[in-house]
Amino acid sequence: VPAQLAELLAARLGLTGPRLAFTNACVASAAAIIHGCRLISSGRTDVAVCGGGYLVEEETFGKFDSGRALSQDGMVRPFSADRSGLLLGDGVAVVVLESAEHSRRRGARPLASVVGWGTATDAHHIAQPHPEGAGLARAARQAMRLAGDPDGADLGYVNAHGTGTKYNDGAETRGLRAAFPDRAESIPVSSTKSTTGHLLEAAGVVEFVITLLALTDGVLPPTAGFTAPDPQCDLDYVPNRPRKADLRRALTVNAAFGGANTALVLERP
Image (tube, rainbow, N blue to C red; front, side, top):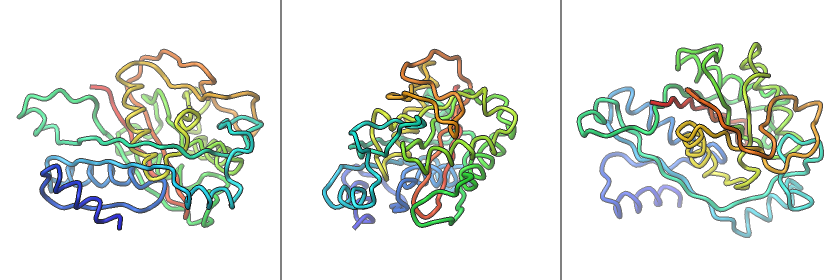
């Protein structure tokens, strides 16, 4: 039972306060981070521990295989013309969120600030994204407005959901164009699922950490395995090689079955 996981972890780690488990598929751990941010920004708590994990197991693998969503050649090629599907991966990550005041009181040096977040549901189809990426665009615009940068003028990188499926990648590209109509072509975008595989419920928090590392290290992670451009996917996808960049802000977006979408904006201290 997912809810029991949060109880067991809190008990083992000595964590107090409310516990909540998110089960909304591939945005679950991103939704947990957003919930933690809302609790802190509203003054209901000073600290929130947010995490997610996924280990590939037979039942879920069988469902994706039956749905013909898995890559036909064992390679994930997000945004490439010859992409043929996703691969599942194992992964776990946990982040500690805290208010700026709480951080100052204990003399901590924050790795980054979460300055914006957004959620949206397009409810287009049980498994396919809205063809124009409508929900993802709304979530991204919400996050950027909250960050005080609705046009994305200070945005230097987007960690895309980028599953490597025909349906997702074109829709996501159009969604990013809708969110940033004047800047989309100049903002580097990459899918790190090309190297981690799809971590399902853990994807949001793992990609949040990857985005954080891109900010702190000044290196954009590449879209690995990129081969040939697709006319439907016409942005800068940082193909195959990492790229140095002096970033101030970065955005990470995720999407899930049922039309759920999340967006988080991180800022370097």
